[in-house]
Image (cartoon, rainbow, N blue to C red; front, side, top):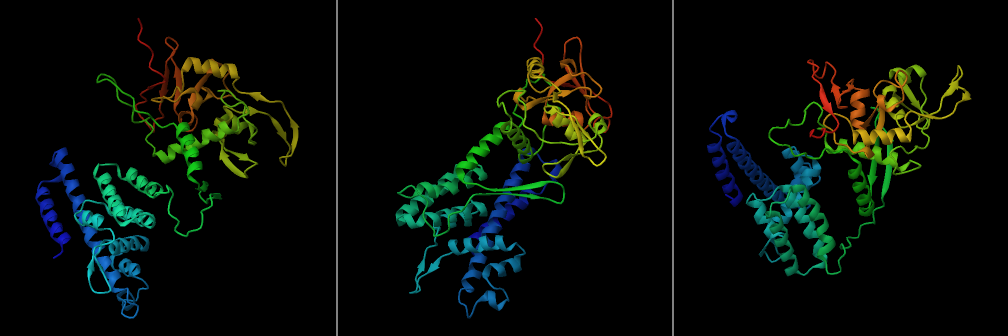
Length: 445
């Protein structure tokens, strides 16, 4: 029996003892202990699986007596995929790790240590996740051409010591990718004979109405873009509360994944980039053509056309775009031929937007702390039915604007203290309980 198999049996027995009680009745700590135990069990199972895959690879090396070919598979990875049911790409990684972690045999028959002996031992003991172990293996392989054997041993030990410090797995994976850039004496990544990758950007319309952007960027451009998108994303920041304060309202908290919140950051970044007067809350945007009927603009029902893009958007979204747009009426004939072009008129002036920024201090949405730079002026009552004045205006970020214009949340302002109140639609809260919006007012003295 292998060392890993023995550890596997011991861990399985330990987990069986922990799992005696019904899951719903165990304490929080007991639950976490079970999860940790089964995670160790999983790592040991995967380590044994990797060992077996490495042996399959060894028996498939001889072309004439290849185990893989005898079983009708072209490679050892394909055979492992067929037997285990794992995807071929995963099987290829498991086989590569199995080859690197098993003992080697010299031409004289002498047994040699594994290519990555220290990582192999830690992996066999259930201390490393397979993905982390594979990343370490690849890192050492990239660094090997520029390092002496003793330097490679030191680097392998350093990788394991760093992993043992308890870093988050994703942070550790990112760090491992950067190691080859610093491990060699000349400070550069070793040349592996691969062609230099060329950064590209691709755009494709999807059948579901979304548009897919695929970006392959160099690290410098990625750094600029990531920083800019994060700086403009309305990611909710943690807010400290005292025990006697209400917690965040779950109905209005932004619980979207970060990748969805980044869309807001990209949208805001693009809007800033095309503004003529960047840095102004009320800067005039360059022209984006949107055509829709007057009725659709007033009611928010129907669709609008984007002639420049050849696509449609909903009328409610077009109304939100109009919140910071310059509206130029165009009279169209029966075949949508322009017959007359009017003069531009902004829904809110620059002075009005600044006044709302001073009054509201940022987004007036429920549970939202977006600053004024993330917000646009929005009408409490639709533009066609209410006045274009700050009494009928409110500063809203994109998410809260969607709550109001698309999802049917109603906004009211208390005349006594000027506080904002939001009433959800019945399908969100049948009781109609109002939520406070904007900033908490200062304590009266």
